[in-house]
Image 1 (cartoon, rainbow, N blue to C red):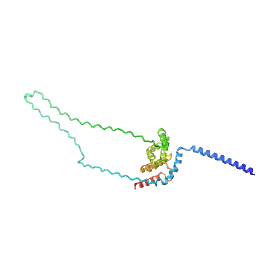
Image 2 (image 1 turned 45 degrees about the vertical axis):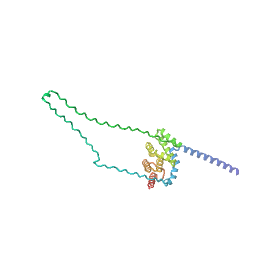
Image 3 (image 1 turned 90 degrees about the vertical axis):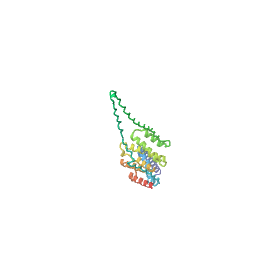
Image 4 (image 1 turned 120 degrees about the vertical axis):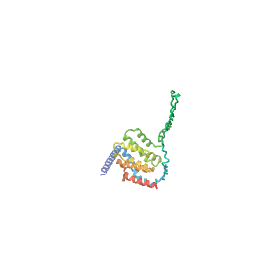
Length: 261
């Protein structure tokens, strides 16, 4: 009986080892078929949900700058220079009295005065176009640099979207460093344009909109952050949270009101 029990234990161990090996291979094969976009969402969504509770509790207060309104100078009708063009009366030529002795002598008419030359228009000053300076990207890390390089070199709409989404994702992860936060907000207009050119925008995830809204909110650009959320609602995409982009707009408005105090 003792030998039979040992044989059964060995057989059971072999069976469990093969079963675990088969399950591991299936999980590995399933991971290889997972799309790039889902991987980005799975890796980053946990961080967003974790930060959701305290992202808006940070003091984002910035002193509101009040611009001094310039007083418009109101000019009275008397000050408005109404220019009346006056034409000089043509010079009346004096009649030449001819004497009988001078009757046969032709009198040359007095030459008409030459018109005053019109003032030549002042030459317009040539405005030199100042070329837009290239953005300094020497400080970016390898992931952001590679993502932007892929975005600029690609031509396909889907590929460009994925590359730009990767750049925004890296800026979101590094948003505690102000230069990454500022760089990420600068990609807002470009991302909205690229996303709208996709064949089926409504079938995409709202990860890019979520990250941009957070970057804009952290940098104090509350109105732009709300606009991004509204664009996401128009496209019908979700951010993976319970309240969605509607709830995100409410939180941004609260942060804006708090910063204005």
